[in-house]
Length: 75
Image 1 (spheres, one colour):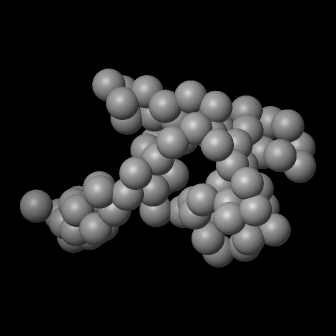
Image 2 (tube, one colour):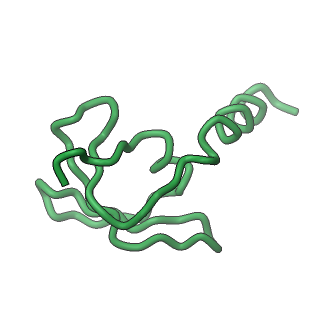
């Protein structure tokens, strides 16, 4: 197994139990960046997220959401 795949699998195991719900989240690395999770597709491991500041919607993997987002305590 390649080192990158090994690293990903280790990281996946670390974040796989983080629960996601529809709602407002902040980026862990820059908490001024706010996202709304609009839809969660468990079957395809994807979430539809919208940037609150720009209104741009994009699909992200659930792994990316679990790793990079934290629930906004103000909402």
